[in-house]
Amino acid sequence: MKNAAPIILVGLSLLGAVGWTGCSRFQCEEPAPAVPESAYPRPAEGEFSVMTFNLNQYALLDRDGDADTLEPKPPEEAGAIIEVIRQVSPDVLAVQEMGDPAAWAEFQNSLRQAGLEYAHVEYLRRDQSVLNLAVLSRFPIVAAHSLVDDTYTIGPTQFPVLRGFVEIDVAVTPQYRLRLMVAHLKSKVFHSYGQAEMRRNEARLLNNHVREALDGNPAVNLLVVGDFNDDPSSAVLQEIRTYKNQPLLHDLRPADAAGDAWTHRENDDTYHRSDYMLASDGLMPEVIPEKAYVVRSPTLLRASDHRPLVAVFSAAERGPEAVPDLSKRLPPEIPQND
Image 1 (tube, rainbow, N blue to C red):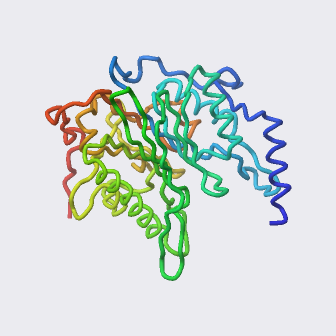
Image 2 (tube, rainbow, N blue to C red):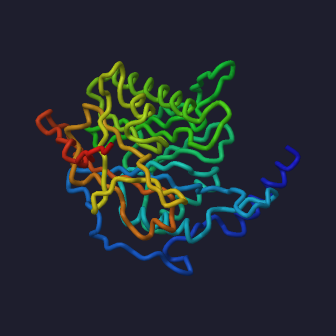
């Protein structure tokens, strides 16, 4: 604790030095290569888009091994983040690994400099968490139920859900509302109590909130997004998506233009699907499946170890006959050899 004050002071001085203005495409010494504006599907009239994006530590952190100083996300990385978002221009943007209030203010300012205006925001910071959750929306956020008090026990020890859960209602039109939940579950970094067990407990608590929303209104237009840090067939995803073996949420499984659905790249050149967009029965008729995708861009190599997911929805209620067949998005099974 003795070093806390110097760290904070240095962090704030760094904010002053770099202005936490990030690195928009106008400021980078070497601008990230742009993807043509037509590269990504756009919402048509009467449709809206949602993006979820793990920003990979958009925060003040010890990046050079000197614990007495904290550094912001490198300008070329921050600028690439803004550029990717600008290219997609989502109507609703959910982010994970957002930093403290200063980083959050800088991020919003950089988006404005890039021509992206989001008048409605929700920022969730549990205690003094370094990496947080946030949502930016072009539509009014008419209710916020974000959750910071969930806890679970492993043996004799009680743990909080480290980053909490964002839960908001977005009035896309006066007649159409979206219930959005955002989560960033425990990573796979080692923990003496078991990182997998911790993540599964967080998933179980998220499922509690999903069921509460569905119990309140079985037809609710519910979308659950974020970095769940586990594979599609994992116990964690089953905890979130189902209850007593009954499906509650449907995996939209966005994929890029090449058909690849991976969302997370590790340093040893391995790839995983750990970020998700899960829709309730009530929301499924409004899904535009051909406009659900993973962003594929060389810019991302400089931005984050995650690729953002995007989905487009109709902004008007539709009947069950409009529910898309998502099984067509699944790759063929690979025969198993002895």
